[in-house]
Length: 123
Image (cartoon, rainbow, N blue to C red; front, side, top):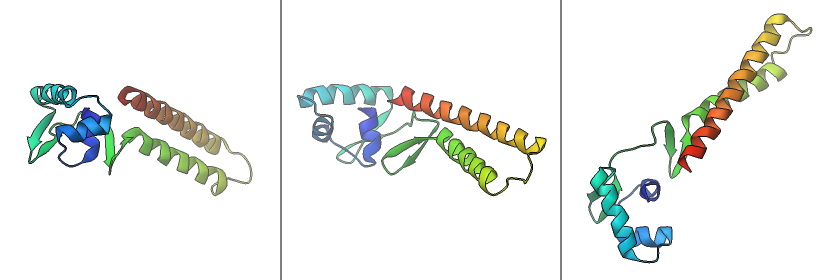
């Protein structure tokens, strides 16, 4: 429910939450909204409810999508790996180049694993 309200980006009412989440009754939606209000995660605003405290600390919000911040690191290391393999490749393999590739691959792997871990925790 928190995630649904967070993703809307605007005040949503009880009936909007009920319809959006496919709940059988508005009393179920009301109960959960009251729990979120009581914990201070959402607040009443205008004719609905909005997120008051963000609990997705390591995420970037782009419109209605949450992206783990680690995904930006994975993208960066993936791009640098491609640049190293395509544009910066020396004519003969040098130890510095191989070390750079190894470090980049380790950083890329760690970033991908952390991104997957973050996504599993929030879904």
